[in-house]
Length: 63
Image (cartoon, rainbow, N blue to C red):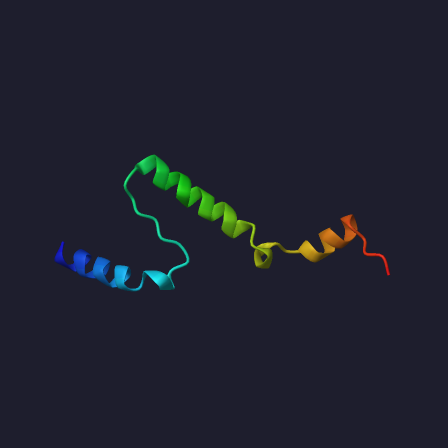
């Protein structure tokens, strides 16, 4: 237990370094938040293979 509390103290003191922080107070709300984060991560442009080609094929740019 003591090791976990020390780890928590470190995490709290460095919370700005994390992309996401979830305080687990309600299991359903926590699960929803995790699900939302996973969806958002999947939609990042760097994870969408062929995105430029898809957009250019659907929305051709006029020269």
